[in-house]
Length: 309
Length: 253
Image (cartoon, rainbow over the protein chains, first blue to last red):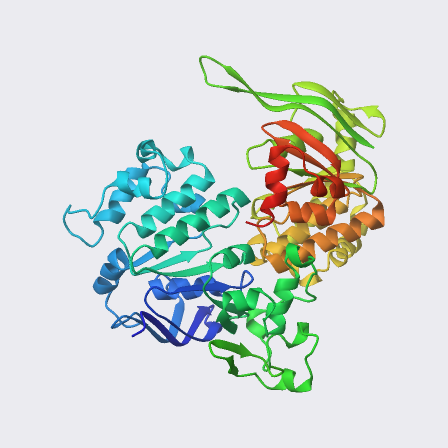
């Protein structure tokens, strides 16, 4: 049975009485111990997917469709159960490590909060020292305030917090944003190591193709609020990508010649009726503009949303 | 055109002991018109400090700076003001480079007014031209920085800098906060503008692949010192210093 299953997920916002849909038609499944990476440009809605499954969207957001985690439906579950699930079974490594730790508390105070969450008592499942040791930070960090840590150390500390309760699913939202290459490689290794020990699954959200490449997984490419391609990362990143957007994204990578993609994604409030990539696509025809493409299977576990594949 | 000769920068640490720490230790480099010099090194090596010293946002503790044959190390206020239009810097994080409570239109007008480049009547026209140059349309003028994307913000910053027609621009990791596809767009734009106005760039990065793509020469910085300098092809083919070897070998990750 699958660990996580998103079906027909739609996320919209109501702003000034008008509602706009930002993410739609998200369908995917994750088995226990599997790794999934979502890549896409900023603004395509990838972080919203993570926020929806953690139940941390702002109050003016509406979620339709279903998110199933084990036997729980995360869209309808009561607050208390959701809290319990997030405390022990779903871990989260938030974006921008710099702003996620409370600046006025020492690291140990914040770590204890995570260790005790959902327990009601003080029977912590580990100690702060053990968290730090697991992510390779010196024990002295426990007594430090966030501003005394470097950006890389903060990212490590957050990975430590996200994984300390041994969650079945770890959601990491751009854990490497703004880090330099050494620190980035370091953090990816850490994620790889922590996610393999035991039966943890990892849902990684990133816009960094290098990171996606070093962590082999199921890769979902997102564009303008939809998945446009899902397949094994080694196939997609090593030249067997099908969707024109994925190809363009790969060509704009410095290792592949840094070729810019023309145009920009459609604005959220005026998305085209047909294929959302049509205006930037070199092989688009009149059919693409009129009819939205369906998500079709092109190989065993490879799905593409394009008329021309 | 731009020269930096044996520049040192010392910061003092601690309140009682005042320990001396050399952040930049004898940096010597030069940039010609139309040329891009890459400055590469691990984080904390002092790349950004060199960049800030170059545009005189920091005062060097020792050494000499020259721009167009003129010594500018201790330029007076009036000369500094004139120089600031000629020597510009683009920072890493577009978010923190734009005043969050000013509209894009005002942000674009700001450098024009500060440097008294044009009369108020021409402003509207010039602002439109600035936008067109960086490939944005006029609807962004009434927005706030929070309402546009990171790539668009970086374009606004480029428009602001380029309106002054600088001769020398320091690019301090201009794309490290942006997505890959947008990164390619922004770098393409920067190169196009460089060719148009024959500007000299000092491009700071930690990604050797980008440096190899964009720069003619490269200087490798490690622990505040420039450990290797030369044409990009040569250094890529035969890196000598261990730090350079690591950077060349690392590629992406």
